[in-house]
Every structure is written in structure tokens, then in C-alpha cells.
Length: 397
Image (spheres, helix red, strand yellow):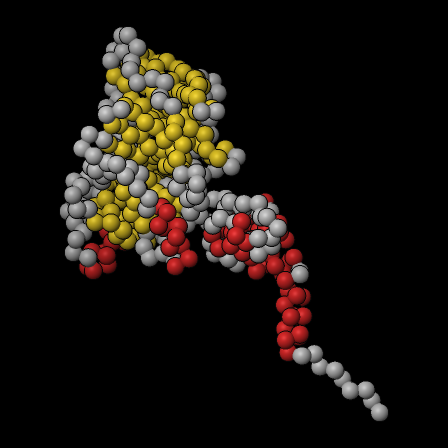
């Protein structure tokens, strides 16, 4: 008589099948890589030390970022009262807590004699400048890092010109290095004869002189906008010329703008190439066309032209607040000109350059002109706190 075949109980069979998957690192990697958001990945890593080891590996994180690039959460802008955060809607429910943290108040004690201004925003860090009765305070806000929300920064080393110099301009630049940011203060002063550019680096909580360079003054800077690309700072504020400071050689040179382009802070914006290969220039003309150029060290190359009327026709038909009779101002251009924020009348538009998708994200109320905006992206890389005895409560998302 043949022995009867023993069939595992359903619960035991299910547990066995689950263990075959969960105990296989390759299969578990394929499951974790399909998680859409870094915040959810941190929660998954809280299951146990083994999951944490897989989720926090450098090779895995590189692949995760390729599949799930940091998401645009919204943007900050400097309003007449205090900086404001405008979320990009709709957002998935999983990011509700992140959006709430991004909407933090930069200045809870705003008053008529106090003023806070955003100077830089990159990654999770917002660099602010606050002036009140007690003086000037610089600070870096770690928006999505609970418990480490603000670090006070020493005052800039220079705020007045040296004898014989009349005009000054100052800017803050940030650069991703390792797992954090490096900050630089660019201070430009000019006389009738010379232009001097000083660069200070924030190191161990102290501003230290990084380099300086001088050139003959043949230009007048009405304002100063600077872009840091690898070891060069591109300084704009002149109609037809870009001033280039080489940080390695401590030398200044000039690059002429593309033919037919004159710098205007409302219609001409620069951004860095994501791989640090050069600098992008985006210019808006009176025909609502956006020209996108790349300068890689030799010449300007026109890499794209965006015909806005061909894109916004449907948007205008569905939204009567859009005024197509005014010029299109450029508020911000992302790295490698992947996306940009535009101002048309009283509306702020988000343009995805690759997909040619345009949508309204904000309608101004008490602002005449929004000025510069500061995109805020999902934090990267995610923070994986050290677990204590596989206790999920030791993780902070």
C-alpha cells in the first residue's frame, strides 16, 4: 500500500513560500528597488538589519536614484512679508508628511522691522538671511532633517568696499561635496578702473578666503548673479558679457553671450550642467520662444528651442487667467535645463523641457513680480539611522 502524500497546511505552505522570497537577497533587492520614494525605502529598511544593509548599499542606491530621480516637491519664493513655500500638486499620499515639513515657517517672528530672505536652496538645505533690530543673522535650515532644523552661520567677511571702490555685490553659492554641501560667498567690488572678485569658503563654521582676482573695469554691474560649475564661477550682470572666475588659476576672463542675446535678469537665466561639463543659458524673446544654449568651454551651442505658443494653446483655452500679451519671464532654470519656472502675467508656470509639458502651479495675489524662485527637491540620499536591536522605532523617516 503506497504511503499517503502529505500536503502542507495552507499556513505553513504560505510561510515557506514567503521565506523563499524574503530570504533571497536578489529577489529582495528587486522588491525594494520598486519602491517609489526614499521615505518609503527608509520605512522598509526599518524591518531588520538585513533589509537595512541591502537598502543602504551604494550600488543599490545608485540604481534606485536612476529609476526614481529626486522628485520636485515645490518651490520657495521671497514674498514681501516672509519666504513662502508653494507645493507642486497633486502629490502622492505617501509624501504628505514631507510636504508638511517643506512648508515650515522660515520666520515665525516676522514683524514690520524684521525681514528674512532666501539666498540659496539646494538639496535639503535652505540658506537664509535675516535682518532685525539685533542685526543680521545667516542660517542654514535642514528642512527634512528632524531635530537638526537650523544652523547659524557667521556673518559674511565683507559687506563694504575697500577704499577707492564704490559698488559692491554679494551672492551665496552651494556645491555638493560628499554627503553634504559646501558654501561660498562671492563678493564683487568695482571702481572706475578695476573689478575685484573675492571668494570665501565656509569651512568648519568659519568663512575663509578661497581666492581673489582682479581685472580692468570695462563694465558696470547693475546686479550680480553667479553660477558655480566645477572649478569656475560664471558671474553675470552685464548686457553682452559673462565674467568667468577660474578658482584654480585665480584668474578672470570673459565670454561673450550668443549672438542676438543681451542679458536681462528677467529674460536670461543661467544654470549648470548636471555633470559639470559647462553652463547653460536660457533666453526668452518677445515671440515667447525660449532659446537654450550650452557653453562647454569653447563656444555657445544652441541645443534646443522651445516654442511656447505651440505648447500653451490648450492651457490658455482652459484658463482665462493666463495673459499671452505680456513677455515671458524666467524665474528659474534647473540643472541641465531639465525644467524651468516661468512667469506669464500673474501666473507661474512649470515647464518640463523634455516632455514639452506646461502647467500653471501658482497664481500671484499681492506680488507684482515674483522674482527668483528656489525649487525644493526630495531629499537625497535618504538617511538610515542606526537601528537598535532591530527596533523599527529607532528609524526616523
